[in-house]
Image (cartoon, rainbow, N blue to C red; front, side, top):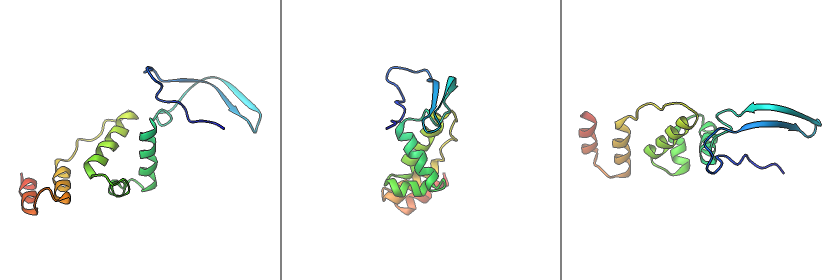
Length: 118
């Protein structure tokens, strides 16, 4: 039974180089040097997050609901995913944290309105 790639590999920072592809049912083996794409190199937690993100069609609020995490936490995980595939995430909107504080009941609606006006 095939196993997932053991990536990231302990104490190794370079990208792996695949040297053989095998298609067992077709009886074909191809040898050479092949690079893995950025998605094949994702750590398991980022890959799981990406799968969920795709499943909910890119709706971070739905990811938040399913994982039971705050929006800023989900946004931070999304930003981490972007960085891991070579993209720089957009700057976080400071209003997101205010809205999360309001949603959790950490601040009153009046306090939130005051912070959002700044």
